[in-house]
Length: 444
Image (tube, rainbow, N blue to C red; front, side, top):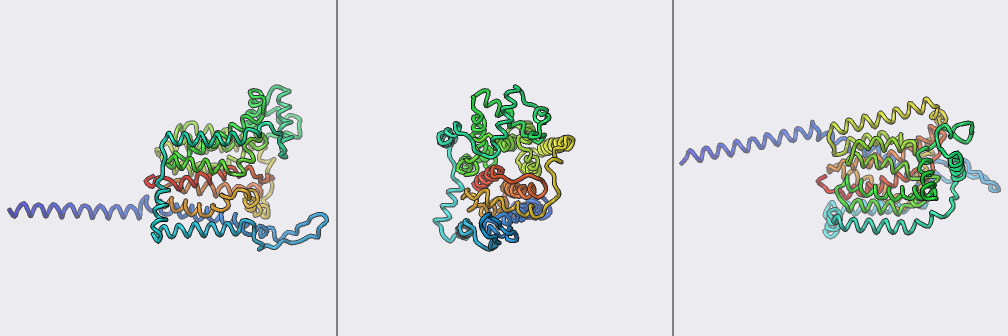
């Protein structure tokens, strides 16, 4: 009777020893293997991203701080130097909203208010069925279409409208549109033209008899794509709906959703390229390629695209192929641009002051987007916490947001380009997607 007991004891000890050894190995892997990488990378991404965001918010809190050394000259008024520490209109709201959000998050983390914790848990766990999400999306898009259709018959007053309309009229008269037409003996035309936009606008004119129809359809498609890509990376339909609503209420989105001067073609093609990574990856480089002639600035999105690909839940071989093809397309485009002297047309020597002023454009161009202003900083912290919990696209959204904010000073500091409000539509898209990422399933 003693022998079986001894054998059982030996087996238990042997099993326990294996478990202990296995646990030690796992801990070692966490310290020296991929665990260390996943711990370090979120910190690096967060520190770089939050630094760019905070620099951009300096002009939100103190609008005149960056420009304080410059004298403001207005005809009929004595020149003045603005007070660098005069608070901006959004300063109180930004500080208050950040304090409230961080305070509630701290109370939730410490379980100080059980009712609050249960509310947060319900929000993060909430999901709706496929049928209900379809109905909600139809209702949302119906409201948007009903509210925006009237703009299709109104004449634009934007500054670039006259020039673009003339280009399209010339192309209609000649019954063609080619690059040669755009640069042939016409000082108003250049190689640096959004030829994809012109082609789609001409199609809109010929098919619908209205230049604004296809830009309007593109804006609808942008809302739909925002839903699907957010749902895909978060594995939650509710997150996709939240992201869509945030984008749809954005002032900067609504200001340019039906224009022909500043269409959303470029950001739509780019967003489709990100969505295609998960659904049909060969389409991703093609869609990205279309976004560049729609708006050349998307070529600067390459590092963000590569990071998104690397953090995506797709096979490693697919990541390598996609990254290589995408980088190859952009580099080939740059070579072509150099050969046609496109880049030289927009280059200038680096201007540190203009680079510095580029960080102020966020405060002025998005001053009517309250959600972005009030919750950008809490969102970045939330994305960092989400990335620490294993939600890899928390990092991707931080990279996208910081990248969009950094592009503004790069454009003004290194080129002759200026920052216009419509260029911040992608920032609002990524902000909306970032909020959706916070609602991701925790096992993602």
